[in-house]
Figure (cartoon, rainbow over the protein chains, first blue to last red):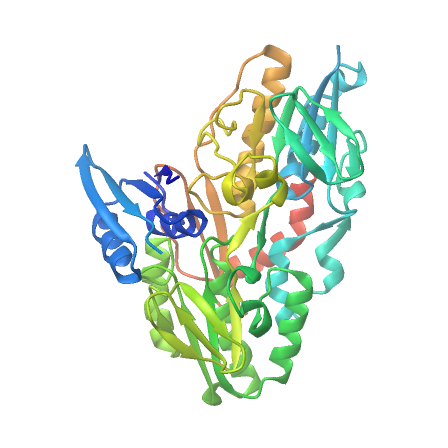
Length: 76
Length: 379
């Protein structure tokens, strides 16, 4: 059964939101969703771009009070 | 009734905590009110950052090791008997030799380890320096290297986040001194869209790489290595040829964490400030073992350990926590064989590395020896 996990990478300078997502995707099962919380605006662009490039599914992004929630589904 | 603090793991984090607790709880320990037990995996304590120097013959291997029983305060009940199952519901840990150790407070400090076997072909074709045998093998490969293509390949997650950059700068100077720089091409690969996770470090490294002719491939997450064709390929669809592959393999936490159902990949879900395991009030996590999204580095473990010592002492003496961890990390960055810089940051302060200098390089070399004072809880 698909799971959903949240990575709270707000204020994470190293390794940062995308590195955390890459590591989490390696442990996830196909169909699992991962929500990345980031205080870095750049993540809202970088994460969907990378996810589309490597063939996972980009579910969507929401922004509230300077925090971006980016949701990704493992597709392969 | 005596209280037991059980520390699982005898690396830097566990050792600092054990020694720090002994220093602050001397009276309670003398009265038999508190006991400290450690379950380790080895009689030997290794200074892991020193492995970076092994491939270049820049450290004597004996400098990397001390007898763990000599590093630890003699009041610690130390067993080389790895944990086999950690039962946080019943406050007990069973070991590979069949011991059952009950605890009042538990510290999980089981660390991280490279897993080249997680990428097809990597173990067969790659070299790395995060383990002693592999670092020796890389030293031999460098000694026999007469020129060609080198790929320095970084994978997520990994500990010691500046080591990949450091090794590139050291390789450059090594080949320059050997007189084979003109026959050598170094390509550095990194998982995200810049040369380092820390943005200011990446901004500093890029012109340095350009200046000394290091090639780079960003957004490179390794999918496979072909040992016969000597190529490494990424999920992003890029394939690079190599004569010598130096990799920073993806890491995992300890198997016992996963086997005990405490965290996927061996990383324990941990409160970023209290360092308590999510869902527990008497289980704390330190160093690489946490799932906190900060650097897996010795300094992280050290600063977390300082907080945990204060909190455990306070809990045992007064029944309350003392203070929060603020996310502090400090890393030296070797920028060659004779220069270095450093970077520090916490949850709210971004990193801002200064210009490299010979003085900082010397300080890092000095710290390679001062480490043993840190492990003893003195520095």
